[in-house]
Length: 480
Ligand code: BES
Ligand code: MG
Ligand code: ZN
Image 1 (spheres, protein in one colour):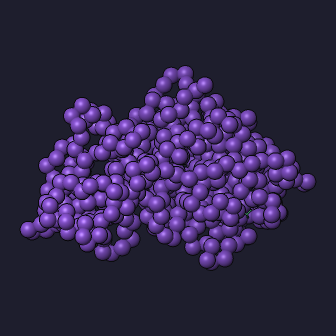
Image 2 (cartoon, protein in one colour):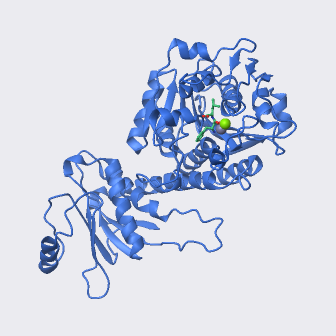
Image 3 (cartoon, rainbow, N blue to C red):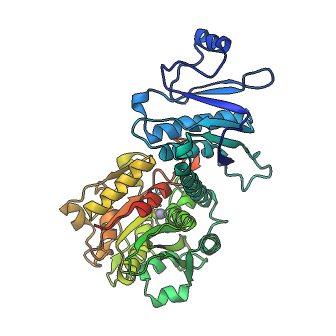
């Protein structure tokens, strides 16, 4: 799909708010639409008149003018994209409309995002591939605003490429994406856009004494990898450190999951997929901000070497952890990755992203990112980015009892707290132990990372959450 500025497309798209008078079509067609009540301008509503002897137009409803927002624009234009695809439209003109309070560049980006979403499908494993939909889209805009939206087109294309990259990584099964292939993917794809990628092997991970990470990895026949991805355009600037949970499969270990809960656990590397993909967009756009992404990737499996419920293990920080539940493995791998970032990289802030707890889904539902943070300012920046990009995010409170509940008796920490403890919160509190007072935000994406049905602008399967939020956060980050 190609987006250009101009108006030489074959089909004309007319976008209308609810109640607007229809213009740009013949009186005859206008009367027909009016009388038949086929089009009222409701958000996402479509009326098309296409083919031989037609006026070659599509009417798109934008909903009530006063309810406009970037997310509503994305959703309306997704509906247009579906119609273009269903009618196999080869080229079209779309006017970049003036929306109250929104600049043309943001409007154009939201439109493109909505439309381009229809080109995503995951057919890597199908013998018969889905037909590829190609359409040349001309955006018409007043002359003096052209330059303004040109850079916006390039940027949203890079962001959506990254979102699709993340979706593919999460959708790919665990016999295809495992620690080695995930690490190689990061190296190959990110080096293309100028990101420096280093992969630490098991021996090096052992030298760093990442015992918590290694304890999880030891139950698998596949060796763990530690992936370090660097984008450092500025001298003497502390990096933003992104950390992604990279469990390429989570069977639960000896606290084995039931088959129904296990089948989607190929997606337990959604956090790592999102930070790898964010680095791709950051590199491609060459965002002028130092960023380092870290991924401790392994599988949580069961073999004769697997860690047990009840084991007491150590960590890179030296804190000991009682493994109450081998299925609470993500926080163990993250503990070492976060501590590596906090103790070795002098970070400006740390953001970790993880499909961490079913409790987060219980608390907020499956569409919302749950967060825990030790810093109001950095949290506010993340929240602002998520709101801006149309991703749902909410912050959990942390009280004294949550903090006490992760403390152990025979080890320093417990990796799992009892039922009713606020599992999404206590998982975050556990991680905070390893941030060394660095400003930090933890994003639990267990819900929105993957869904059995399409919602908003997200397809069925992997959504690419929270690549858009992370990219925007990095781009807009300003030190106080
Ligand atoms: N990967 C899971 C969390 C998860 C659940 C992600 C559902 C996506 C969808 C995580 O490793 C896990 O198993 N968490 C346990 C923690 C518990 C044992 C404290 C959970 O949520 O049940
Ligand atoms: Mg688990
Ligand atoms: Zn997990």
